[in-house]
Image (cartoon, helix red, strand yellow):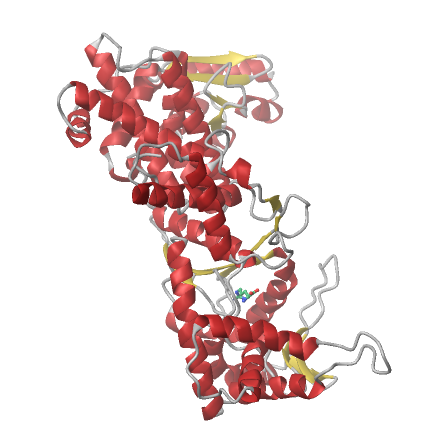
Amino acid sequence: MKRLSERLQDVVTTAFKNAGIDEKYSSVGISNRPDLCDYQSNGAMAAAKEYHKAPFVIADEIIAKLNELPEAKKYFAKAEAVKPGFLNFTLSPEFMAEYAGQMDSETDFGFEKAPDSKNIVLDYGGPNVAKPLHVGHLRSAIIGESLKRIERFVGNKVTGDVHLGDWGLQMGLIIAELEDRGQLDKDLNISELEEIYPFASKKSKEVYEDGPHKGELVNPEFAERAHEATLKLQSGDPKYHAVWEKIMKVSVEDLKKNYANLNVHFDLWKGESDAEPYIPELIKLLTDKGLAYKSEGALVVDVSEPTDSKEIPPCMIQKSDGAALYSTSDLGTVMDREKNLHPDEYIYIADRRQELHYVQFFRVARKAGLVKPETVLKFIGFGTMNGKDGKPFKTREGGVMRLETLISDITNAVAEKMADRDMPEDTKQAVAKQVGLAALKYGDLSNQAAKDYVFDLDRFASFEGNTGPYIQYTVVRIRSILDKYAESVGKDRKGIEDDLRTVKFTAPAHENEKKLILTIDRFADTLTNVASDLAPHKLCAYIYELANNFSAFYHECPILTESDEARKMSLLKVSALTGKILVTCLDLLGIEAPERM
Ligand code: ARG
């Protein structure tokens, strides 16, 4: 189905051409003065210079040509030239309603998937095996899951890969500690594993606070052994590999449970370890091409470019002891993905502070020809989730907040608000969880990813304002309106939804109704924009506006007491459509809409 904006653009472009003005000036957009008009074009002003005419004269000529076109009569209630040369368009209420009706009858509200769909690899989540999943990894999971859903909705193929941190020093530390405890062969469970890593990490870093050895490592031998164990594991030692597999099994099972709990789902559960087989080939390639060279024993690749505004240091590929690094595994992973997935685009989602790493290894990947020149490599760096003190979010005791704890804290806060609801206890608990997750996810996604934000449980979980629960609540209200109506005619909601299918929208009669329908009509353009900018926060802004416009509409246009039957059905249908769009958009944010709350 042709979009509203495309239809408007077509007719306006024709008017420009008929007035003898190059169509390159004819761009139409949403009005930035909604009090004056719905859509606008500033093309006449832009064209004035080239045509040596006053903008207003050009604008007048275009409007005259526009008014000759039958489509323009259909689309616009008013199309006018306004000084100094704006073109202001007000949509015809009939057309607005007709378009919303078409949206309602088509799948995906008439959104047509991109014909030139892209094959995208989305690298998100990025948890580190054997370390507890904490809030630092929360943002990656929430943003990534939403982008996966959005990109799929607009028609792209997306493979989401969790890219586990499963090959680093943490593995050597755990192995060395298990050795010290004589537990190398023992079966482990997740709580034991979670105790071991922080213990071993601390042991390897602990220094004397004072005395003759002040500042020196307490257990240098342990740190050294952990390092060696890592190297041995990386070079395929069978005994260590068996321990590694055991650790992986326990940890991945736990991670899967945690992500499922968040309603985050990955297509691939690969990790840094999967890059290992590619590393010898990578190093040979980089060396043969003359890109990698030895510097103080380490192997590095220069990546600086003359246009850099700040210095980009060489990318280190191998340490002097032969150990692989973060970049090495990311480059090996690119080779694996090229071989198995052939992506047109890579999107990596990680903490903003890792930006340099991505700049470096992207450049190496390009220089070495690991990817095609036209392959797109993107990094989305997100900011920190802070506490109210403006510092990275911590537990009350100052420790790292575990994701599980955070989720249960939020669920409890919501459950408290819902204490007086007349609902079976287990339903209430399930709804509190859905609402809690919405609070958490929307609180995150409604901010531009790159920015830091303050985690404010009270604000995020509020049923009012720009929050996930408020959007969910709007859906619940709409459903309850449909239910009430259904009851009054002795049907159920499903029956009413069926009936509404054949209802024709009547032209909006009230200003608030018009505003709501205009917002509905903008759905397709919004999604295209959100997807191309990789910007879930723009989707949040859209549904917040939609929910607010619904409230204003419902306030002024009582539905159930409306005496004109045709209008009443039309108002019900507008409400139902608003509800469906909200549910679809929430789903694209990874948020569920409860039946009641
Ligand atoms: N494991 C990393 C971390 O905890 C994130 C991995 C991101 N993905 C990547 N391909 N580098 O910071």
